[in-house]
Amino acid sequence: MYIRSLSLRHFRTYTRLELDLPAAPILLIGANAQGKTSLLEAIAYLALGHSPLTATDQHLLNWRAAEQGMPFAQVQAEVVKKRQTETLEIALQRAQLNNGNARLGKRIRVNNHPVRRADLAGHLNTVIFLPEDVGLLGGAPAGRRRRLDDLLSQLYPEYVTALTRYQATLSRRNVLLRHLRERGGDRAQLEPLEGILAQTGVLLADYRQRAVIALSLHADRFHQELTGGKAWLQLQYRAGFAAAQPQAVQYRLALAAEQVPQQQSNLADLEILYRETLLKQRDKELLRGITLMGPHRDDIRFLSENVDLGDFGSRGQQRSAVLAWQLAELHWLQQLTGDTPVLLLDEVLAELDRARRGYLLDLLGRVEQTILATTDADLFPSSFRQNALTFEVNEGIVTQV
Image (tube, rainbow, N blue to C red):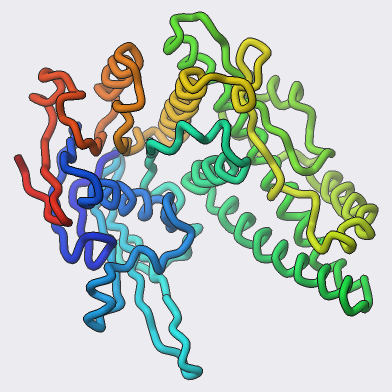
């Protein structure tokens, strides 16, 4: 899989960009804040339907265009896969409402046909490496959850639908909990929302748990190669719902088939347990005014040699574990789809020592298209630069070198 052409309109730093790209390594060279990361972000945006860097689409609009009365942004790409070539497009348009407020609308098209965000799954797969990813292990669980959600969202439309519905219902339930705490009322109003949380929450937990265990098998192999066989790595899923299936059971499933298996018949039983658990802790949640259980409290922990790397790992250990996790994503996506994802790397080599840098560059030869952003081209050996297409990025202008 590779992107043959990329078009940007009023996106971040870019007023207008038309770029033809080969199925080969591509180097983006330039100083900081010139638009290199924004170009990678635009590609990931097409794969996910949202930015991996900001939760607000408003931040993607080019501020100069907005000032000039053109509150509009567009990202479009032609994606070449083994079986077909497709055109993906996301457009943002800010419109004035009757009440005087502004609303930012999003239009998504695949081959010129309007689709939902969930329907982007499978059309473009990417794995992105960002400098801040080194802090994923020691940071808040939300960052790790988001990374896993973004991965699953590229594969399963039903996952995107369930996640969106769960998040909206969770927000409504929390508002209702606070209302009941402050003003009283009929607690039975919570029941329909709890039914939706149970149905979607169990589905999300099931997909996440199976994915983490499949990824753990690949990550362990990459981690042992990165460390010269000195340390094993295990990714451990910790569900916000205690009735999730035991890790050992799922591990055996993953050994039998390194993919997310079909949903098991006991999900209906888990839904019942989920609702019962919500009912049991209603009093506590009413006092707190917040839902205390569910996938929004899930976590993924990284264990190596009986040490939780998030709590006790050195920066070097965390760096190796994150890199192994990301390489596992790449391998798993390729395994499930038959196409190698587009690999997006932002200043990653600067975070790696010479051995890990060489290991990663060697792996790039197995990827159809890799786009690398850097401020220092000298980090790359001359043999690599000779085989790569190089662009200079300067204030949103991209020029081939």
